[in-house]
Image (cartoon, rainbow, N blue to C red; front, side, top):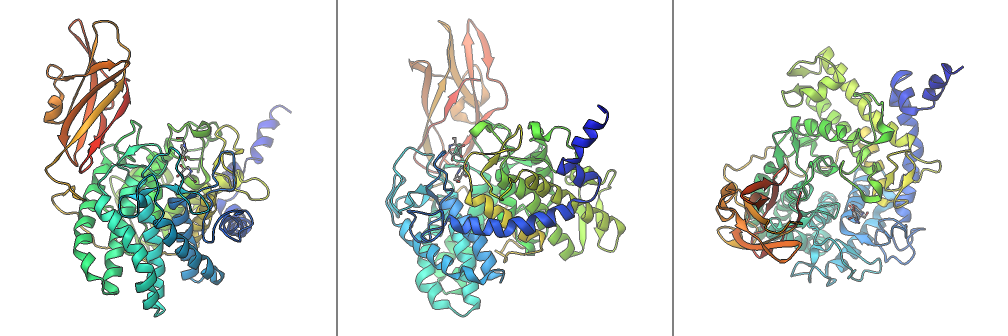
Length: 579
Ligand code: NOJ
Ligand code: NOJ
């Protein structure tokens, strides 16, 4: 009897069944068939003024979640834009023609929100970077990680998709008169501020962030094409210059470990759903498997994906899951928010990236296995050699089937941990898979719909990623960049013994070029915070460490080096704790 128990239990584990008894495909077909209409209903329920969970929200306002504990009854520019990108794609691709008035309401609401003065500024002094507002369209004035500069870019991307569709319908006057002024405000903000420090999409790290940079790049490229189409030629040359600069900067997040470092600051591994979300939200099937724009099937994005996935084997619910099977993934492995759990939208993003990749491989009729992507493919097809496999080959058939099965196995994880009733919260527990944090997260529902869309071969309209090349020299432009210096105020919390002192040194002249002998002494006037303000070059990526000196002995902080990119102008304050 005791021998039978493990086998009996195993049969109840959906992922296990899906791996060994039959493919995940049927499980996932059934899950999406049931869950998609639920997700659509629950997504719309969170949109004012008529959504059933949207009490108090103005027309077109997306509530992040109706949860009051944690309190998510606010409207985030990022969440709203991603939700409406989903709605606009569904409408414009003909999947749901009932959504037109929702889109009109969103446009009207964003036109108002843009003009609301808030703690980040007014519409002309940085207020567009404000991350969230009250649902009655007034400013949220509490403390928050601000600004978050992905918001205006994501909103522009959604609205440009909408504008492009309307142009195909011959409605160019609405595009020029109503949409363009809203879009232009966001694009001007992106063009002028992309090089400034920002909080990341998780609202925690203030530095530069891959997702933010990538969606900003997309916004300007799409903006250039739209401006050209509607005769707004005056913005084209400025946006073109900055788009090239952003594309250049975007490459600098790649690291030799074979993945994208999510943030230039924050002191983490850099393995982060930020990067997978980037790949799906800048997907452009016309660009093929281009690695410069990090397309879902590019070798960089596949290498990155495998690294990201494996970082989440730390969760108890992933224990024992085979290397070639889907598992529960979250924001980043160091996450501690609500205990640091898998997120539905993160696990679904893995599947979506792979479905997007399959669309392109089938469209182009071949798969390239490069040295960089070989480990990703070998995980699914042991021994696979570097090479190009045309769609006529047996290997192409094997690989595409394996990738499809792998993608489905991530959805199967989400299916397994979707409670009866189909509600999707923000997170599911790392220890038992139970839903946790905010219930009915609007973004979770959008993520489910876009993953299903990609699985069904839905291709979003092109944004112009095809054929882009990285300039040979990068200008870290934005407004006021180039040549100047900024005041950097280093603050580090460090307990010391009497006679021991804290110094800083790093990768630039102003930080004594990594010399412990010439390192700069910090002041202990605010002990245990040690401080020094140094003028350093603007728009520059800088690495540094603190060191302690005591009785002639030098002790360095532990690896890795700390890093930030100075803003184009103004000042910058790293707040660190000795490690
Ligand atoms: C609330 C933010 O929305 C979330 O992303 C973050 O993890 C927590 N605050 C903790 O900083
Ligand atoms: C916390 C997430 O980290 C952030 O990305 C999101 O915008 C807010 N919650 C609202 O959903």
